[in-house]
Amino acid sequence: MRSLQTLLSALAIIASALFYSGCSQAPSDINEPIKEANKRMMEAFANGDTTTLFDSYTNDARLFPANSEILDGKAAIGKFWNATREMGIVKVNFETTTAQKFGDLAIEEGKYSLFVKGDQMVDQGKYIVTWKQEGGKWKVFRDIWNASTPPPVQRASFNDSVLIVLNQVKPDKVTQFEDFNMNILSPAGKETNPQVKANVRMQKPVSKNADGTYTYIYLMDPFKGNLNYNIEYALNAKYGKEKADEYMKMYLDCLVGGTSQAMLLAETNW
Image (cartoon, rainbow, N blue to C red; front, side, top):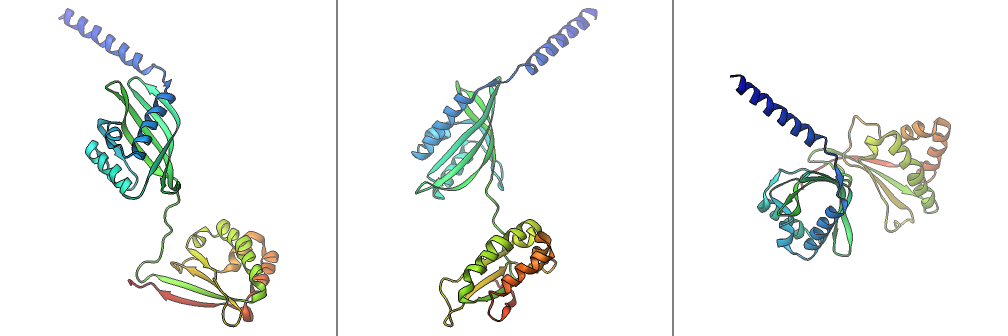
């Protein structure tokens, strides 16, 4: 019995030593090998070389795309990359920020960007990839990312309210009106009333009206009754009442008759 206890104690000591030895192993820099592996993937995608691209993943690889289910295994990953090409993406770029090796695993942080024809970037974001050595090569084991581009702006759904404000601008006040909106009102809205600014748009005319005036439109899409859309509210909050009064005079001076026309509408399902 004592010999069995001695053996168990010895095994426990050995296991403990191995555990702490593994935990104390300092990570090492592995930027260059990971950059080379990424380069092979980027070239394979650009050339339509699916064999090399799919071989860049371990057999048990998993992807964690934003707003999507987990993609498990090479078959699912292959469908993902084929769908990416079918969307018109012709080039992907991976930029390694850091990469550290922990035994047979490596953790990479980086940035990605996607391009369509004409070298036009259509998406960019950041990622964390866990790499694993398989067959003497570094391959992607786990991959998670999300976009850095702003999400689409919410638009009105069926039966939501939409407010349209028509501004008939005098011919000689167009520059003043645009200056007011771009350099005075817009910054005030972003800073002091961001919820409203997020769903308000302005359209400018492409030509003048028959009477020589120009129609500029404020579109509140959707219009939310619990928010304060009053121009003076944002101006007062940012510039103070005295300056806000001056800016309001500047705005109204641009308008025919010194007033605008508002129309409250409902979104259809057309």
